[in-house]
Length: 235
Image 1 (cartoon, rainbow, N blue to C red):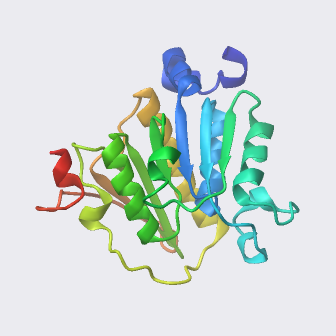
Image 2: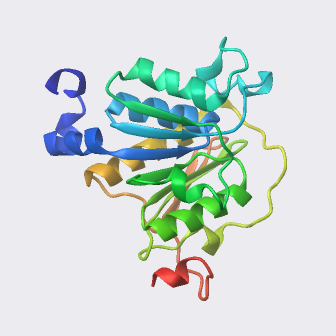
Image 3: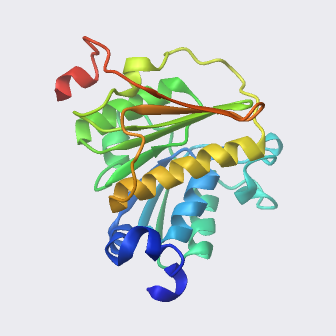
């Protein structure tokens, strides 16, 4: 264990590394955020990853979705699983070529310790939110819109959920730059590692916002919305 992970073990401990090796993480969305999250989690030694996405790569994806460069038009989930296995032979990568919906969410998250929101639309995010609340597992939320990005950690029964503060409406086509998406995806990966290993202070109940145009970085507290239909059941 000391060889490959010797530079991160001083930060998370050998017991933390063992937690990563035993963990099962659902990466929901294999686009720009997902490419960065899956890469960092595989390199960190996560034992198993569920990779869920229905899409195939398009030319407009390639400015930020580096996993698919030169890979043709196979489903993203399958290409992502191949990528993860190349990074870490010890990581089990399970592709799911599906759009997350109310019917399949429970099966996608089955046995997972944590889920990572790498989606690009709020409609599916709220479906994922409901599923993690039902399962009682943490959710790492991340989103990017042009130069702006945000990350928070949802813990059922403890923090506000996505429905407390996230609008249902989607803005349409979202401008995206690879460097900005990589920053947000990297923060999501770091928060995932912190939650799995119990090291550091995760963004539980706090929203980190980043403006890459000015490098203004803010953290604000999130409160449960009184009467929230989703998370009030977990109180």
